[in-house]
Structures are given as structure tokens and as C-alpha cells.
Length: 182
Image 1 (cartoon, rainbow, N blue to C red):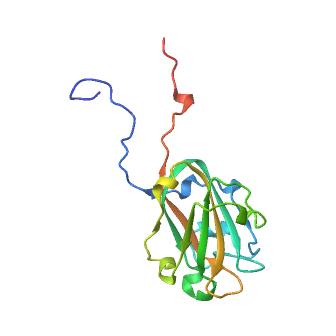
Image 2 (tube, rainbow, N blue to C red):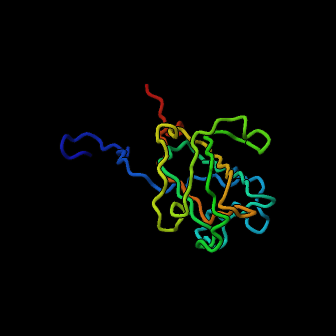
Image 3 (cartoon, rainbow, N blue to C red):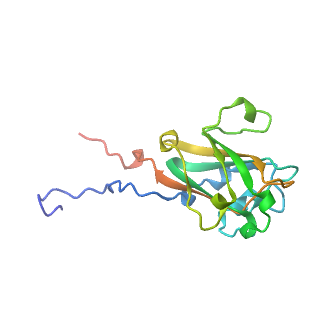
């Protein structure tokens, strides 16, 4: 009971506006990569150790699709350099982001306008760098984000050490908890 007016307390948590790490909202079984190295697969991006990371295979281009188990609002993205920066030539310099585009491949990536394009400096990828803020209005109902690593700093392959998204879940009604009135 709410002590001020004796009404029942609500279970709704007020929206504090605080952005959280969305790692626990990732639906790993729905994630995929195109042109990933067998020794350094995309799944390594989520373990928190940049020495494993993810590398492209045949050339510098890499597609990474991250699916979420529910709709989220994405505020920022944290990209970490591979192996603490020991291969700076493999750092991505240009990444296109696509919201809610599933099954994008290299054959159709040029036919779709990206939601955002990130031009990255080596400082953006440092372990201690702040996450890169996105245009929040474009990332309000995200079920999946596809990253197209288009270019790097001159290496034969591209490599990332870690990937995190920050934001918050979209408030939705859980119909299982909905009680019929009357």
C-alpha cells in the first residue's frame, strides 16, 4: 500500500532515463556474420576479452547482425579494438548501421540506405573510450542491428575486439499478465 493515500502500490518501475548495457537482451541464436573467420567468429565479440574478438576472412569487409529478444531503444554503441590495439591496421574505419534489416548480404548491402554511418578513429575503438552516441530518434524500436564493416586502416582483414549496445528495453504490455475485467 502506498502510505500517503492507502492506494495499492504499483509494480511499474518509473523510467529513470538511464541507459543500460543491452547484452542480456541479445538473442544469440538469431545473430549471424558474413565473411567471418572460423578462428575468430562473431560470438567472440560478446565474451568481454578483446584478444579473442572477431575477424573478417577473405577481405576487409564484414557483416555482423545482432538480434534482440525484444524491442529496444539504442542510445549508443561501444566498439572495441581487437587484441588491445596490437593490429591497428585491422581496425574498422567505416561502419554502416542498418536497423531492423534481416538477412542483409554483400550482394544487396548497396541497395539499402544505412540508418547511420560511423567514421571511426583509432581513439574511438580504445578500451577506455566512451560509447559512440547514435541518433536516438532513429533507434526507438530496434529488434536487430546489422553492422557492415566497409573499410579499415589498411589491413587485409578487419578485426573487432568487442561490441556492446547501450539503451533500454521498449516498455510493452505482457499479455500473460493482463487480467480480464468484469
